[in-house]
Every structure is written in structure tokens, then in C-alpha cells.
Image (cartoon, rainbow, N blue to C red; front, side, top):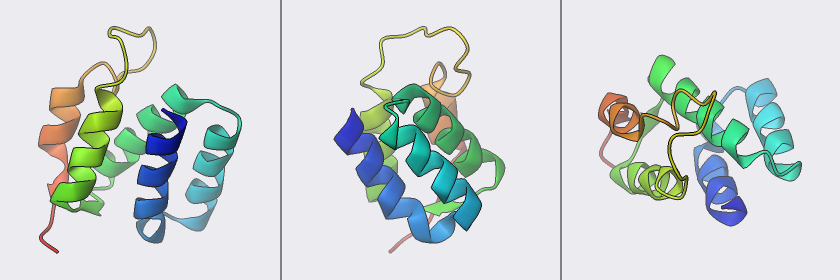
Length: 91
């Protein structure tokens, strides 16, 4: 989980505000992977940050590693909704 979620975060780093990126890296460094993935999903959906098909696939893989449901994680618990709301761009 750590490697996949951190790799995804780093692939998206250039599209995240610096303060948000720093916070999310902190979650990763602390082993708070559920927090990282949930807030990253929220950010991608709410801000409509562009992602490629490959990045969408990475996110789907990360979301698929969680055993659902997990109390308190709205985005992780709704992976289909998250993936359908992403702003997909071609490379």
C-alpha cells in the first residue's frame, strides 16, 4: 500500500498545491495511507484535477487494496463513484 499510494501521489505532485502536497507526503511518511488516499481522492474529485488513464488505473489499484467498508472514509468506501468523477485527460 505504501509504495503504490506514494507513487501515485508523486505522479500527481505537479498538479497539487505545495501545501497540500506537503501534508499528503506527511500522511504517507507517517503510514496514514487511508487518510492519504481518502483526501487525495477528495482533492482530485472536488478540484477536478486532470488525471491520465494510467493514473486512474493506479488509483483504482490503490482503492482496490482496501477491505470495505472502512468507517469514516467516504471516498475509499465509494471507489466506483470516485473513479467515475475523475477528470480524465489524454496524454
